Image 1: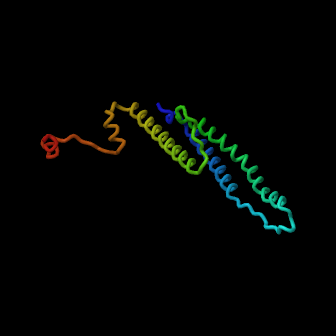
Image 2 (image 1 turned 45 degrees about the horizontal axis):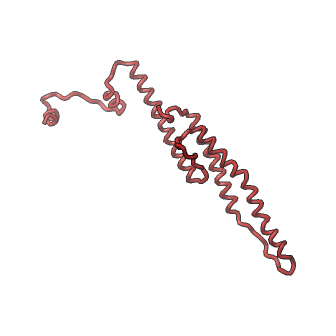
Image 3 (image 1 turned 60 degrees about the vertical axis):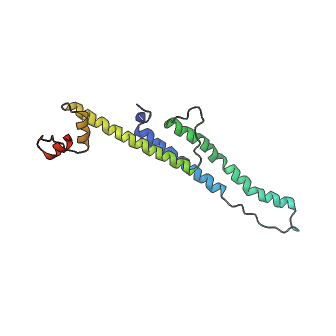
Amino acid sequence: MSVAGKLSKAQISQGYEILQRISAVVEEIEELTTIPVQVKATKACSKSRRKRKAKAKGPVATTSQSLTRPRDDLKTLPSEFYSLIPQDFGRALPSVIATMADVKVKLELLEVLSNLEISQMLQKESSSKALAGPAIHPLDRHYSKLNTHMEPLSKHEREFQLIEM
């Protein structure tokens, strides 16, 4: 059985929650990095050059300090995601989830895993029902899942003769 078969609905939903938190952090970082720095133009005669430089650095310093927490979150949240939804990276480091495109890829992965979990659950249900009843050939079981009714052909029918040729 694959790793996908061992993931529960709860794990997949927790993975969705973590990706939502990562998405919020990525949006927060994008907002903070696109804040325009507004510095009032001052007259050279009224203030010295040194004071103007100090004022210009103020908003930039505040922005870099406010980016510390979201960047730390971007280091911890992906590791939470990967510990909950294991993936094979070989010997490489796990990929960083730092952009909305990365979040979208992981959301698509969770959708596929969710669909796999549902299909495996349906297969288990149908196989348990099959065990309770009479022995049915596996091909007949698949056709019945497709709601297909098959009847044997008589040797004298035209379709049978076409198949024989």
